Image (cartoon, rainbow, N blue to C red):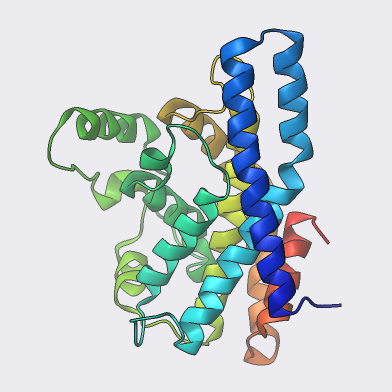
Length: 260
């Protein structure tokens, strides 16, 4: 049975309260307790993982369909890249990773996520993989410099034609847009889920940095899950060349994440 809008609001409110409680508990445990107490906190965080993933799905899907319907306040017809940016931020916010927002919402990480999903649009793409070591050098420069420095497209492993399409396309209810949003949502949640495991270590204390993010990204990128999920996204949006409705889209994402 699908949720009503009121049910979704109650769930979102519950997720937000749990997230705030999680942050408070983490800080208390980190500052006052050691060893076994830290382990208990880490276990509790793992228990809350389904709640985080549920919040990611709800917030990402909700914004996408609000943008499609033109009901986002103050915005008319939205560009695809603008919708992706909002979906990205909404999903990142659900994880509440300490000291990680600047990196997770930064241009470099967003570009890596685009690299992951570009094959959903370009199955025959022969673009070279991103040079993560050189990207790390750019991240260091950005941290030290007063002005932002962005890695060139070639270093990020992105196809020029894909970047141009994402930058110029208007958000529309068509299969090519649907499968991109679906793949991006699933990939981002799974990369952050991998990063979440790293942040439970005592030396990180729930925080994120570029090095562990890079490790989490590489781990997911090299897994078999990427191609399997992308094939499923293509299949879902190519059946009779029709797009899914909101509930069908949400259900498909849950299926891909193993959350059904």
